[in-house]
Length: 216
Image 1 (cartoon, helix red, strand yellow):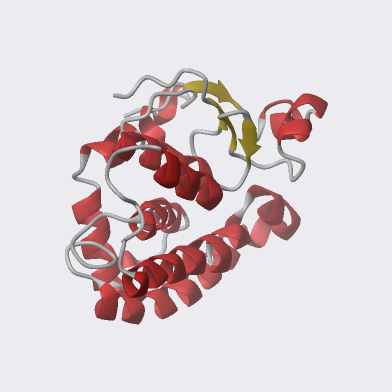
Image 2 (image 1 turned 60 degrees about the horizontal axis):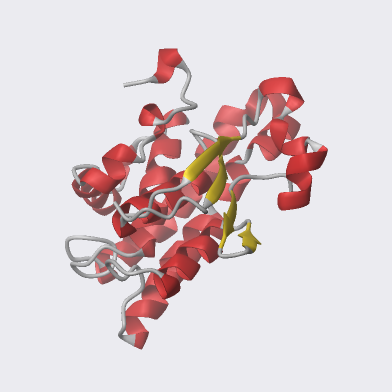
């Protein structure tokens, strides 16, 4: 692992956005200092005055790196891809790169935010059917796209930012009891990615702030 201890991260173990950044750090071999931010405890530690200065949206992650603070997962991923050695997370080819960004945005903007904790708290008792509806809606769009773009992974045979976005979203879908069998391409790619070390070590069940009853 590349030692880079000046990187400070505000993560929550089960946050999709935090997991994306953990995967990217693992793929790049970047070590970092974790500052857990519990989204439940104390009414939500992301709402504290101190943390709100780092991320005014009061969400995770917040990453302090190279003298700047970044608080959107895709921005962090693209920044480290541009400034750190290791496997490229965005293809060199412009068309392939555009496909990766399209898939990443579809997940990160079109599916995942609708299951954010702040949204679910407003939805109340109907949060499971709510989550199922919007995940299925997104996966119904994503499945035919991946049939066209995928090889071994989301776009061809190289791991990219799209794969980094996919795995946490499938995990979230399973939490909402979505039948992933309806989406064979999504399921196959996800199963392939979960065999890779970077995805294993970054998994929510293996984090320092994971509650004991959820640890693997």
